[in-house]
Image (cartoon, rainbow, N blue to C red; front, top):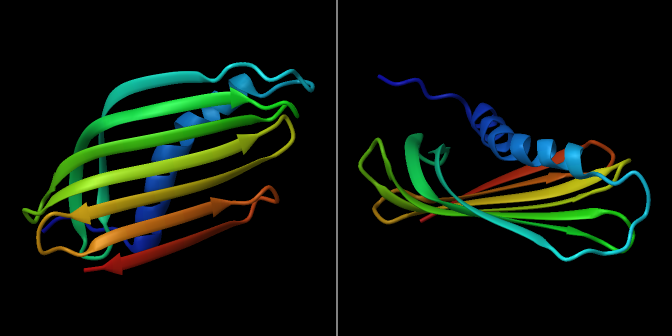
Length: 148
């Protein structure tokens, strides 16, 4: 019998796994004052990831790639867009396609962020969509939807 955390723990682990690298990047790149817009910076990397399909409790290991684009806006804020795409296999034998998008806007005084995680089952397991929104006031909202 494996350990299966509750949905809130799963969502927070997933959010922290996605948010931590972005927050670190923002801390280093946040402007001290208004700046002129620069060209976007773009990075691509291969990555292993894992998550839990909270719709059926299946642990899924995913291999894929992510693309990060960072752009300084004319108003001095940074726009970060992170896209992860991969395929994986769950511990119940289901194959998955995973897509994560993370859009973060940050300045030296505030940030907002939207994360959408889609796990599409290639088998009988339900598909999962998790949407997390971080508001500038520090509040968050999380929605989980199971389909299929």
